[in-house]
Length: 183
Image 1 (spheres, rainbow, N blue to C red):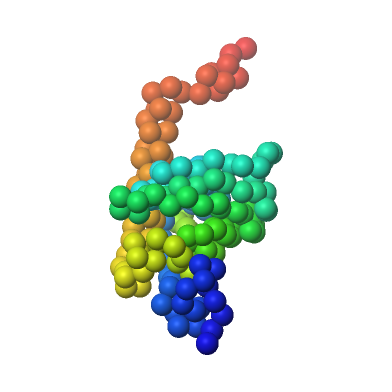
Image 2: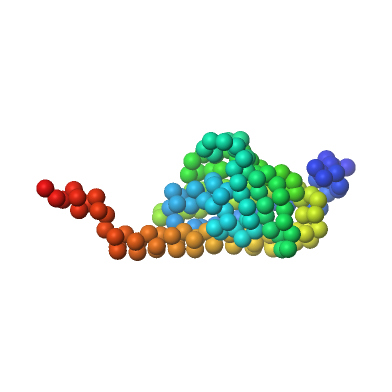
């Protein structure tokens, strides 16, 4: 028999509650625009519809070990848990650990590819509690499809922000540039 799951039912070895999904996505924006969204849980609601709430628990700027209170909505159900930053390499990689009911590790790795970013997202966890019957029945391909949609939404959110920024700059030229030209 395999190691017991954190919830005490089933075993990790039988794989019934283990979820491992890898998503590789291209986001049509530079790493410098993409990475801040993956490294800041307070921005996740902009592209991940399951995210209801994130609030930093620990004081100071985010760093390895910083924790966030978290709530996700899965259908009509709310899941409350704690996210913790496990590792960060600026504009390259960030790792998150989530408590029950996700009991997961998520690693986002970013690589510049011209003006775009290739993101590899590795999700691995052991569902526990109510999450087992809420999501345990989903096949891996469906979980992959759902998570891949987050990167399409991130691409759209970054595109909207870039367009808004360009419109603003066209309508409001840099006042500092005109001051520099005056004698």
